[in-house]
Structure formats: structure tokens, C-alpha cells
Image (cartoon, rainbow, N blue to C red; front, side):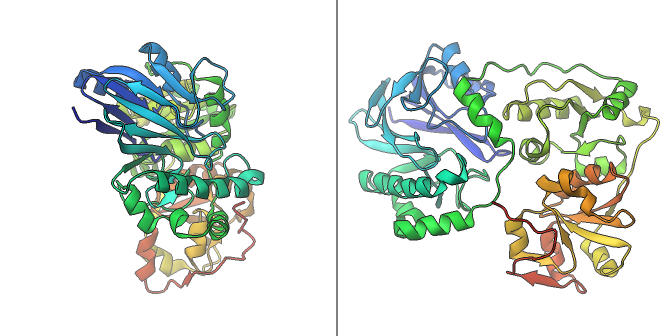
Length: 464
């Protein structure tokens, strides 16, 4: 039987896991921590899990590989070079591991990490049908080389170039590429393209295969943007070996308990969509709806040592938020609220406006336009006379904003701007949500847009 590959997407983190099988035996590559999604597919397909593969120690999520392998008595393939604190099936370069009627072959492809492995997917005749590239070759890009520290970035970028060429020289053009990152993940060095690719496709489009090594290094390092702060917790968690998760219902809290927790410094996270939050929300809460990249942006900003409480009027939204958070190592928030918000004595409301409204007030000394996008987004274009503080810096820089003005906030799509509302509101300032995608401002008369220039205003900081 031909080998089949099933994608298991985690779009909120921009990652993809895989199940490869011959109809009976299966191998799982780079599983997320909520392994029930993988197990459901194994049961539906009638598959026996033989092997679990880790291409590298991930920096953007906590792996479910160890728990999955133990639960199913499967081999857990991890590079011999990774200093893990658990038992694994140690793998070295060029090692072939049988799986049912097929096999996988490990290839040392450093660059995203020093110990990174890619895995050829070999059929019964030992011909490569695909390659699981993890954070090596992505669709039109490569994994970023700076996650282990800027001091290693140049060396790793050079290794990434060499690894890409190793794969391109070793494998036939027809071989399919299955990366773990590159679907919106901050682990990608540059923007990726498309949902599928082959070695032949990458030879035509991937900078690592089109540029000489030094040019690739220079361009890659110059193009790197900031990455989420929670990444610093992921590598150590994966080296230690994460345990099973608990997605059971959180303790339900009363309105008075919620308000007491807020006064004691807890983060109360409202996981409804931003329109519902703006219409009426708990004073002191912040908006991170489960309809967006909640784990990425909340994880970026949340101090892991703080108390975390999830609130919504829908139990399924709180459950979805729990699942998102375990993927980044936030295992059990201390509680939740799942009732009508009208039970709170006081609810705050947030005004929502459009960029047409912005054009009418631009230059008004009582109104500040705040851009909370990342530096790279700002450098592409921005509204003249707007201030800039990236969202992930806002908690430490919010006092740079004037106290006596309304703060009208925008980002690329309004999700991050909504997250900024609660942070600004806590300081006594009045935030206003520009509830439109940034593209909408580009055709609004009365707004001057600066294109392709670095903003040298006091609020601009380096991404490095």
C-alpha cells in the first residue's frame, strides 16, 4: 500500500504535525501537546502508532511527543545530540528506522537548531517519497536561526544554507516537503508561501537555494523580526520532557472572587470576540479572543508567574482557550467565569471607530493615534503623526502615552489593538478601538501614509 501523509494543523500557532502510515503502522511527526487530536485520527484510520518523531526541540510550543510515545509504547525518535532529561530512541545522521512496510531516515540538517534532524520518508523499495523538514526548508523560506540567541544566529544561518543544499542535492525534485513551521509561525525566518511544495519547487523559489551563502546569511539576519517572549519557556520544557495535560473544567469563580483577584494583580482574560468585549467587559480585564491567535499574543505578554483567569459567557470558548494555552505551557489557569456578564456591578464599554473617523480627528491634540504593530510592519508603511509602541512592549511602555488624551489604537487586523485596550484602560487613560484592518486606511482621504521609511519617532525601537 502507498504511504499516506495526514496533516494535523495548529493554525493559531502556525504549525503543522503529520501522521504518515501504510494503512496499518503509523509514524507521528512533531505532535502538539494536545495529543487527543492525533489519537482520534489513529482510531478513525485503524492505525497502530509505531514511532513518534521530534525533528528538533521546539521553541514555539511544548511537544506532546513524549506522552504520546509512552502512552502507545512507541519509539520516540530524538537526536542523540539533544541533552534531554528523559529516555528516548537516540537517532544519528543517516540512521534508518523501519516503520511497518516503510521506513524513515534521519538527516542532520542544522540551522534552526544545532541538532536539527530532517527525516526522509522511504517506501518499501527505499525510495524517498517525502521529507519531513521541521524547521529546515519551509515553503519558500527556512526556519529562523536566532532562537538560540543572537550570538549563534550568523553561524546557524550559514548551517541553514548548507542544510538546504544538502536536502536539495540528496533528494529528487519530485519529493514532497513537509515542514513543521511556516503557516504563520514566528519560527519562519521570512514569509512562506503556499500550502505544499516539492524539492523542485524550492529550487525555483527558496532564497536558501537561490542565493550564495554569505548573501543568504546577510539577508536572513537583516530580515528577522522580534519573536514571542514565551519562546524562552518552550525549549527548557521540551528538554525536560512535558507531562500529560488536564483539560477538565476549571474552577468556576464568583463575581466577587474575580474582582478580588484583579485587585491582587491577576490577569483576567476575556476570550470572547473583541466586539463583545467592547460592548461590555469586566473592569481590569484584557481582550484575547479565541477567534484569533490567542496563545501567541497572550503568551507573548503574560507574566507566567502571575495568576490567570479565563472569562466568557460561553463554556466552549473557555475550553478552547484552555487547549490553546497548554500548547505553550500554561497548564491550569486558576479559575474561570462562565455566566452572564450582567451579574457584575459595573461593566466598562469601549468606543469603536473606523479609519474614516480617524481622518476626521488626525492632528487633534486631544486624540493620539497609536500603532501597536511590530517594527517590520510599521517600517512598510504607517499613518503620519501616529505613535508606535508594539503590543508586546505596551505593558512596560504604556506611561509613554499622554494621560489627558484619548488613545485611538490600530494594528493590522484589530485583534492586537483590542488586546491593547485593557492595558491602556488599567492606567486610567481612555482607549478607543479602531476596529478595521489596516488596509482600510490606505484609501481614506485625509490620512497621509508614509511608505517604506523607518519611523524615527521616540516610540520606535529596534527589533533585535
